[in-house]
Image 1 (tube, rainbow, N blue to C red):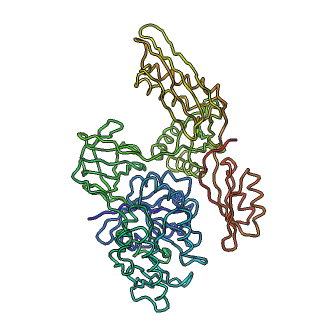
Image 2 (tube, one colour):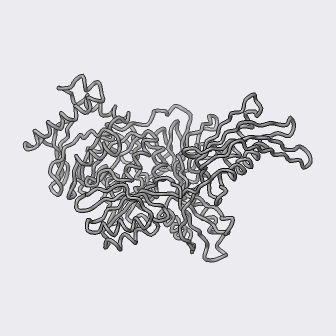
Image 3 (cartoon, rainbow, N blue to C red):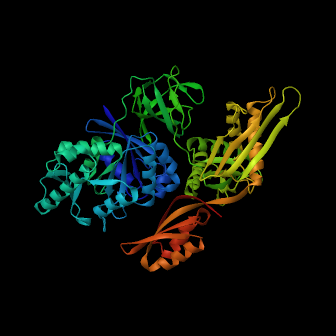
Length: 637
């Protein structure tokens, strides 16, 4: 059976979980339509998801459509859980991006789109909620063009507006698809015939600008040529096919599934190659893997390439959210779960005789921390074990001990991320946990550098000694950390240069101003010297670490704080109080736009000032205001 591995991407509340539920129901994978507001969805099965009404954990499900197995991952839409999206995108071949027909492209839908771009994941778009008051397919398509810098190719024309939305005209086949109790296909309604022909012509012209085959046939483009060109442009990322509907009212799902099969890519056929798979998620005793090559069977021995450890495969499970069906084997392209595997997220499992390392998902640095402690001293050990397990399952969380206070700090991507993590400990492990006030993660950066720092590391304590001589230049860098060597004449051998770089990276963990991680610097190794007996990689690594620490003490340094882009939607009559509150939180308004009796305000605000903002906004707008955030980097304090 042919396979499609796809994800559902969207801003929170755009309706992606409802889209997923309708796909499962329509394909026969479920026999009852799940509803988010009733807490009956298949993919949002975790109690916290049902209580909060949002997707928190990426959930994998499978269904069959048109002789294809569709492996589908419903991803979170809230910014705090962007790392769940990142891990999912690493193993997906394509994606459906869901947009609200009223709001168009929203902040988090733009963020997940960019995440998909980084992994080269082809996408199609589904403009949802076309039955809402103010729904506008053309405006949504325009926002896709303007905000995402991609050409939207709208392949449908809505039949009816808002509450009167009943179906679409398929502009490829020029047929009307309408939904009552079921899908019905018929001729284009007479009142829409001219508009449909005009839209078809505009679609052909837009595609012709991007694809030579359509350009050659322009004026008499066949349906097959147009469909083939749409697939080519989707796979190239040169354009995005746009469909529309109302998932809640069961309208538009069948053509969406047809588009998944027609336009999104199949996994590369690599069944005959040696086995290789990537672990992209760990949940409890289940390890989720994407098989990239070969075949995996029950009882096979596989190698965890990074850990250098072999393990025997127990049960292989086809996953349907929180339900599982055991299968005998998995082939290239499959997404399955392994029961009892010890592999961690990002690990490569492969054939022992053909070791290989697959690129793991990128893990973002945490930006918010809270102190956690067991209410009872006797449960401190259990809390430590629970935290360790939590970090194994979610690599975007981190745990460390504060050297000054002795507290245990849990760090994550946002306030809600940490709330969910702590609640998971309470429920899964039955622990009473105390939590401190959230603290943001500051950074330190170089404002003015220090050239020519000479450092000699000499140590003699009996036996072989340690000797390393390095000279470093430190200067500001646009972002992150960069290292280069300008040493000539082989004065520092290549293996020692690598050791100096490793030592410099060690020194970045604690800056001179407040012990915060250091970023935004370029270190150049300009000179050095060795000893014929006492020099070693360890000595040069130590020299690199100590030299950079000393150099940072001579640099002009500054502290950076994390900021977020806050998008607030507020009734026109209440704008003044909201703008004043944003100003009091050191927010800088960057734009505003009117939308249906409300004003959408965008501002950049220090993350530390956003804690508790939900309560403040509710009180100032009588519960009518809403807001979303997304990371916007770091700025000087």
